[in-house]
Amino acid sequence: MKKFLKILKICLLILLAAGTVFVVGYADRVHYNQICTAVNISIHYGAADPLVTKNDIDSIITRNGGSLKGKPMGYINTGRIERAITKQPCVARASVYEYNDGNIFVEVNQRKPVLRIINRNYESFYLDEEGALLPTNLGYAARVLVATGAIDASYRKNPGYQVNILALPDSIYYDSLMTNLYRLAMFITHDPFFKLQIDQVYVTEKQEFELIPRIGDHVILLGKGTDLEEKFRKLQAFYRSGLNQIGWNKYNTINIKFRNQVVCSKI
Image 1 (tube, rainbow, N blue to C red):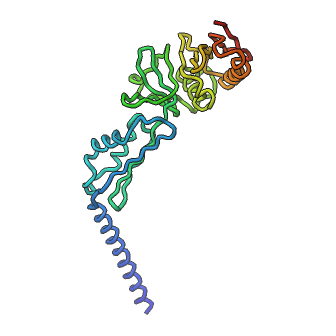
Image 2: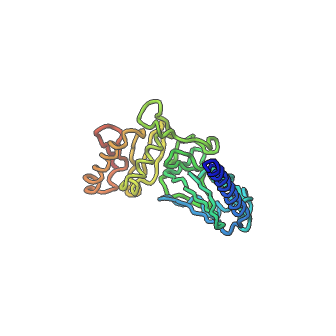
Image 3: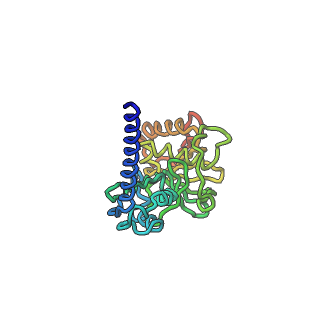
């Protein structure tokens, strides 16, 4: 009797396994032949201005998978589409996945520019919050800080360039122009007061920074992009206790290069 029960148990297990394989295989076949009924594109911009649109993403999908709507799911390579979208310079991350109801979902996270650079050859491109260079889009412009002047960096020559943000603590080795521009752009972007006040950064031939404010006719001589907290702290204090009292057009230059000093020159 024990032997019979053991054989019966083995047979039941075999039937159960076979049934599971059949159900899974049937479900796979059903899903393979499921018709794609809709493609849902979602782009997350955060606080950034749009540099990529649903039409842009739809064009990438069409180039890499044809028209998906009406096509069986088994003929759609979501991995290939996801990789193609992720390769776009203004895309930080992308995810393409499908549901059993025939819906395909495309979720895109756009990069967030913090600085628009116009180099000495008048090439224009962005630097984003992760330190990557991005091309400009002729149809869309991000409202961010602008840097001009003696800048040799080029997006066309360095399309994969990225600031090493893990090595940003001040040091001689990492004291490059692009690193300092990144530090400065990130500082201004995340400071509520100076984000509204500073409009443009000019880079001199000595690789020092001059800031152009929105209010007032003065120029702020910042020097290198180091010791930013100390420099902007004394500038803000001078704005509040000085310019608010004597007027915003009293001086043509405000020099905050030197420690514990604010040196001004009159018009």
